[in-house]
Amino acid sequence: MNQIAIKMLMGDKGKYLGIVLGLTFASFVMTQQPAIFLGLMARSYSFISDTGLPDVWVMDPKVQFIDDIKPLQETQLYRVRGISGVEWAMPLYKGLLKARLSNGTFQTCNVIGLDDTTLIGGPPIMLEGSLEDLRRSDGIIVDIDGATDKLAKISDQPGAAKIPLKVGDNLELNDRRAVVVGISKVTRTFQSQPVVYTTYSRAKNYAPRERKLLSFVLVKAKPGQNLQELTRRIRDNTGLVAYTNEEFKTVTYEYFLHNTGIPINFGVSVLLGFIVGAAIAGQTFYSFTLENLKQFGVLKAMGTSNWVLLRMILLQALLVETLGYGLGVGLTALFGYAMRNTILAFKFPWQLLIFTGAGVSIICALAALISILKVIRLEPAIVFKS
Amino acid sequence: MNEDKPAVCCRNVTKIYDTGGQKVTALNGINLDIALGELMMLVGPSGCGKTTLISIIAGILDQDSGSCELFGENLLTMSSQRKLQFRAQNIGFVFQAFNLLPALNAAENVSVPLIINGVKRVTAEKKAIEVLEKVGLGARWRSLPAQLSGGQQQRVAIARALVHNPRLIVCDEPTSALDHTSGMNIMNLFKAVALQHDRALVVVTHDARIFEFADRIAEMDDGHVVQVQTNQPLVAQRH
Ligand SMILES: Nc1ncnc2c1ncn2[C@@H]1O[C@H](COP(=O)(O)OP(=O)(O)OP(=O)(O)O)[C@@H](O)[C@H]1O
Ligand SMILES: [Mg+2]
Figure 1 (cartoon, chains in turn red, purple):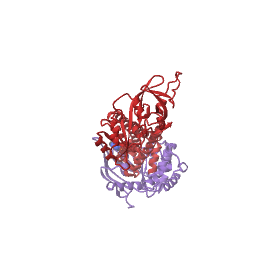
Figure 2 (spheres, rainbow over the protein chains, first blue to last red):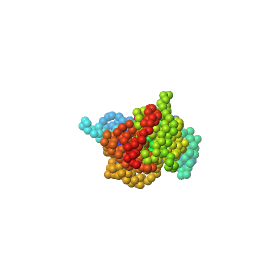
Figure 3 (tube, chains in turn orange, brown):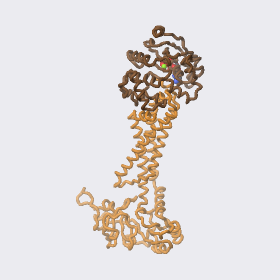
Figure 4 (tube, chains in turn brown, red):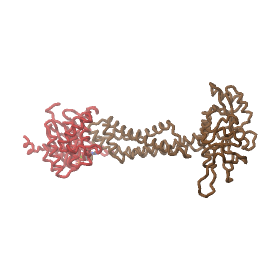
């Protein structure tokens, strides 16, 4: 009977295609939209991910997320260094500064100042030059996306492509000279401003004169040190806030979750995808069953039990579900792959596969359920009706 | 099975359809016996209850009162599981609109009753092709219903009604969807391959041209059987 069920399903090619495509669409939207959402959310804390070396971030208690800079007094660095369980503690400057391009226009850059001696907190990938090159005078490292786009030079010929910023080129940061000594690759952030790495002391020179310039203290715990205890100790001793990497990511992530319209927007499109997918697929599946009602009636009259008919419909639903789900998820993966080098945010964790699987299962279960109810209630006597 | 009992024995069968308050009495005290080895035709004007009666006889519709025994068994009192099994083993169906499954080829269609009875697919299809040969479609077993003419489809349907060797075959207007010649051919074939001493055939029709194929004709009107005639020349011819 299973074979018959499959043949019945595939016999009507148009309907079959309609159901599968409906489910494909639903699972595509239910995967692709959350993937973009997760990608965007991950961007909110990508700087924390990129700065992998330290275990703990220390900051002003009022800081709400990674880009929310509330500078500390430099003496705080030494207080943190004095706390037991701290292997090392390094300063980090993070701030938005204006860069003057060769053509005279200004571009806001995300400037990161690293500890002068250790250069801890540097970019995850160096494409040209090395981190050590920052020790050269006026040296800065620019990220590739910034170098090729926002910091690129406008060509003299109108209409020609922009000329990317290269190693050896000059910039002006707050009227001070800066020389590009390396090109890095960083994970895209929310603001998608160019990211400029330099040393801490040079960043202080570039930054406008202020009493406090220390953005974060990066802390490495001693081997075997319990991080929760360490963060509590730092808090108690300094009155500052200390988060582990994961905690800081969560704090940042949640700030964006609660203070922007992003989750609602994506929630709505996922819901719409679910509803449209359910409507198309569920409706086609149901009308497929309705059209085949006479056939089910014939089988029933000839002695097929409701239980067997139920199994046949479930099998049909399972088949279209698997196909639609596979195609939808596959399309999403393909989409993500095609967009890998673009500005589009995209993150496809395995949990999302489960989420979509559950969504498509619900659609198919609903469609199968109403079909099954219809077939169970079916009077076999309809077979004689013409 | 009790051999001297009739294949079908209806006593005082009534059926009232209730469609949203409006009651239609489709059968109003039917008494009818159908013997093994005979072809009984049910005739009468449209709406007189022919289809309703064979639905009850075939066990796919329950009467409201009266009794209808099939081979001495009362389907009304059977468990639904037993009833399904009884239908699967004992009854073959032929419909006006053929009702073949469009996605299955002729052999697969014919094998459905065997598969319902738990026969393995390969065995069932082999048997199905044998029966298709009997109805003259052995070469067309791979064809889908849509690739066959109406007459050919009805032959496939007859093969399907025969394949599991049931003791009762019910047909509702088997020739109405066919032209005259095909209809006659179908009835000739049907009598030739389906009639057996241990099987009863019930054919509903209002196609007067095929009355000659009946052993007995039960004439119905307004929910009653008004008379049962024996088709003398035919019966005489056979004895
Ligand atoms: N499912 C149903 N619900 C309500 N009324 C019905 C139903 N089926 C049949 N009837 C009514 O019962 C009566 C008998 O119908 P039935 O189909 O048995 O007649 P019939 O003799 O087969 O007619 P025809 O020659 O037109 O096929 C008719 O009045 C019909 O309208
Ligand atoms: Mg009828």
